[in-house]
Amino acid sequence: MDTALYVGLAHRAALQRRMDVVAHNIANMSTTAFNKEKVIFQQYLIDVPGAAATTGGKIASVIDKGVMRNLDTGTLIPTDNPLDVFIHGRGYLSVQGTDGKTVYTRNGRMMIDSESELALLSGEKVLDENGQTIQFDPEDIDVHISSDGVISTNNGEKGNIGLVSFSNEQNMKRRGSSLYETDQAPIARENMTGVKLQSKAIESSNVNAIESMVEMIDVMRAYEKASKSGSDYEEMRKDSLDRLARVQ
Image (cartoon, rainbow, N blue to C red; front, side, top):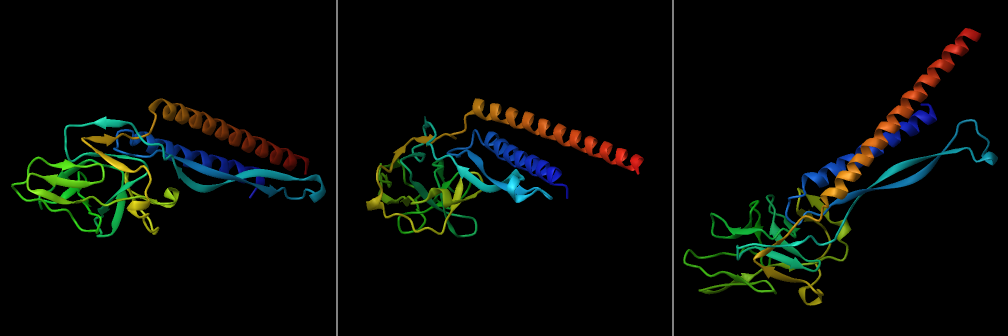
């Protein structure tokens, strides 16, 4: 394949990938505790066919190296639900995924489900510090969640929410919009610094609507420019081949 054409296609593919991530961020502006993402690209050099090594005949292109999460904490939003929690610091709630595997989230919007167990609004069971579900009785009222995760009602303590943190959050793999899975061992609670809960509050998404829309417009313009350059190059290439054919 023609080197310039290959580079042009790689450029447009990178812009498309960036657009997909920006669009995903915008779509989740209202998702509780959603962390916006950005694509990380790495430049690499392609040798120009026929160019002497001494002339430095190379063309720059890019490789998609993956996605990085922005770990800034979203805004605290007060609620009237005593089961809602906002996580101060870089902590996560332990929950049971639909496949039974333990996954993690900063989405603190919770409820008591049809099985009288503490769960996220999306249905995943919230786990205690021992990895067990947290059970309520029908007569339980006046639910209170302390800053260290202890849940109490008029009938006494019901459990302690499994609050954990990790040494490398960027290595956590997103599952859905606000759940994460990882093979890392959680940091012991006694070794967690500055992590605590605040009840009757949740964390907003950290997506900035204006910044994201401006970024989307910039990507669209860059893609249009790259497409025009590709079309211009194809026209020039076709014209050159036509001229060459007439000369022969």
